Every structure is written in structure tokens, then in C-alpha cells.
Length: 286
Image 1 (cartoon, rainbow, N blue to C red):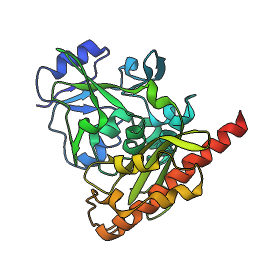
Image 2: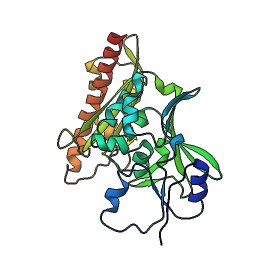
Image 3: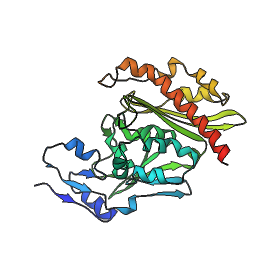
């Protein structure tokens, strides 16, 4: 017979998850659609009562996002302009009802190639904190998601937080998504960009693309090429095919592999220009 547990403290949750095989339930926005009409036969540990895993806080090292923080909380938080891309992605995570329930850690642990939260978190150099009864470890997001529906989380671990280092809090950012319709759609391609501009030139760039490979990824060659570019529309001229050569898009009902490969440049260009536009708005607001 399967068990259902809803612990009230993190220590209790870690003790339970270390005792056997469990499916972790938080917001449930991926859990229940994946389950469908089949009866639940696995042990389920519901971590939605762990209030200590919710919320966003400033730390000496940067910004800490609790694993059970919802997308609505991300949207409502007072955060630096570098988080604008993450907020824009939060608006794309399903409907408002989904945003109210779905959690940041759940989006990462689901490890879908089209998970909207992953590209902007990659541009923020996100670190994933994993806790077990034996201790705590931290992994760069790029090392946490291993493949389609595969992560580095051990069976006895919970994702307790996502940490954004202080170095990633500078600059402005944006998120761009291509779908078959405007709302409530799975991405065909998506991109996030964070740019730091000084004296009219880009001095730091972080660019990530999702839904065009098994795992969303940064584009380091493009990032290097952007450094020194004038902060204007002409920067998209620096995008070239070799910057996207490492992508391996699939073909499905939403778009062919060739279409995704071609769309990659355009969606990245949109994210870059939007990030520059956010900088102009930020200066006007100041």
C-alpha cells in the first residue's frame, strides 16, 4: 500500500525521504498531469507545508529563492532589473492558476526541455541547493539538469533553494518565447539574455536558449562575441550560424527540427534587443 506524508518541518521531510522511495509533490502542476487517470501507487511526500522553503531573500552572497516559491511570488517580488527575464518567463508558465501553485524547484526538477524558467535562471548563474539528512550540496544549474526528465537530484534529496550569486545581479535582462499561439502554450523555442552595459558598450553578456536541445544551454561563443559591441540594434549582426551549431532540436507537432534551428537566431535576437530596451526603461524610471 502506498503512503502519503505531508511533513511540517524540513528535518522531518529529509528523514522520510531518506527512508525509501518517494515521489515528491509540491505545486502538483506537473505531478497530476503526468499521473493522468492512473491510480497513484507510489509513496508520495508532499512538501507544500514547508513554509521555510518559500519566499525570496537578499543574502550577503546574492539572492536566495526558496525551492517552493511560486511563480506568482516571483512576479510580485521587488527584484533587480537582472531578474526581469525571470519575471517575464514566470508570466508564461501556464495560466494564473498554474503560476499560483507551480514552484520554481518543481519546474527545474521536471526537467522538460521546454521549461520556461530554465533559460533565465541560466543567465543568472543559478545554483541549485540540494539537502539530505547527510548534509547540503550546491550545483550549478547547468550541472543539475542532465537531460530530458533527468536531473542530478538523488532519491534522498530535496531541492531546497536556488541561489543567485551577487555577480549576476547587475545588468538588465529579458525573455522571449515562440509558441503556436500567444498564451498557454509550450515553447517551440525560447531565449533569455542578461546584458551589462558601460559607456555604451556591452561589457558582460549571458545568453541562454531552451526547447532547441534536450537541455537548455548557455551560448558562450556568442556571449564572448557580444562583449565590446555597441549597445544598439546593430549588435544582432554579431549573431552567426556557428553560435547555434551546438543545438540539437527535435521535430514534433509544434515545429520541425529545421524550423527550430532557424528560429533560434531570431528568438535570441529578440531577447537581446528586449534586454537593451529594458536598460533604457530602467534609466528613464531612475
